[in-house]
Image (cartoon, rainbow, N blue to C red; front, side):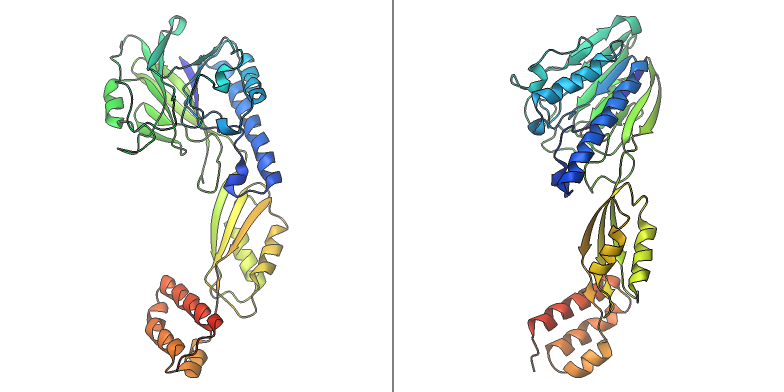
Length: 358
């Protein structure tokens, strides 16, 4: 039995909440839909497509959007599509999922543990859809499985936390239950929970907290046998980069150091934060302009502090609060980057406020 497992696509989500400019956010929404369309197309060679929750960011969707998704499923009529709704597309009587005719090959699990038996491939697919945005525990017991069948689970929940509002799952209990494959959703990083339980992760990264590879799992399952592989969906990545400018004496040096840290400046979303002590002649805004010329969608933040001639500054302020501050932190700052940043930040604050206590 061949399967494809995808999750947490969050179709139609407003990417502006991820600090993207409006035009880039709109473009990325279109790209995510196109990537999902490609994953669905690839699933035509599978027996089942498992979607373990948050397929749609329902508070951003319209009925026409749901119809577009259903049209994708209609293109793979020989593949059974199973959807377990999650906390962002939870199933209610007024859900858009239920407001239009559904493809014959799509089964949306109700808000009770339910199974569907596919006789031609001797496979039973179990699933559950959220009916509200919060579950502080799993609202059903794991079933006794017929080990002569291939048993799949499709579920949205949190197997990484023992408690919380997003349906905590007992990973050890899932392992004991004996599913041949458990397709899990909610955690946005692809990972294996046990030998047969996997989080597909978000199909494409959604903000700067979601670094690394994203995509979907596919494989083959038989009773007691499983092979799984991960396929990246290469749209764009989110890169969160820090550049320490301490000791760099020119704009060109900072630009070169920053460019070395970016994987693909013309493709990826990059949030770059400049830190450390900047030289007297360094203007971070000029660095940003130079870098931005060949970057797709940069987001810059300047957390630098002015570099100071501590010897001169101490002589000028010996005996007042500035001199005492330098004396207190200078030695530690020579070997500790955090202490050095704190020293320079403190001097920025003291000097800008005009304090010069005697």
